[in-house]
Length: 170
Image (cartoon, rainbow, N blue to C red):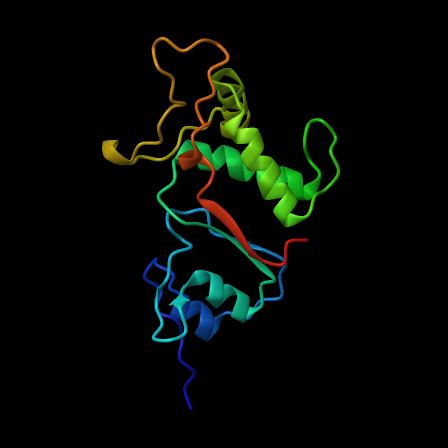
């Protein structure tokens, strides 16, 4: 009897996760756009990555509900994981998953343009991202011409509210 293997086409589906993945992990994070959306499951509600990863053995899943800004997401995920691991510059202790995500959202929405650029410089370490079509280029920190130095480019919920945590909050 031949064992079926997943078809590797560069795209992951919830069905592949359910069929082939066996996890024993605390957290799966899907920071791509709309990773939290599912399809109608005929009486079972929406079926998607959250359900698939929980059924495959993850205790929590962090994902997004709408299209997200690449730069804001990079900043948010960096802060989220530094919170989880207790690796913040202020020496904060490790946080539970829900608290870590909540703090990262609060931090991002209060981040000034100057602070965002400084953190992005640390994250990039001078490495330029690979070639992407111009329409998909990572956007610089948004800043209107008349904005002062304390301008908060990611204050609007579209930059941080898309991310949710499902499952175990600790």
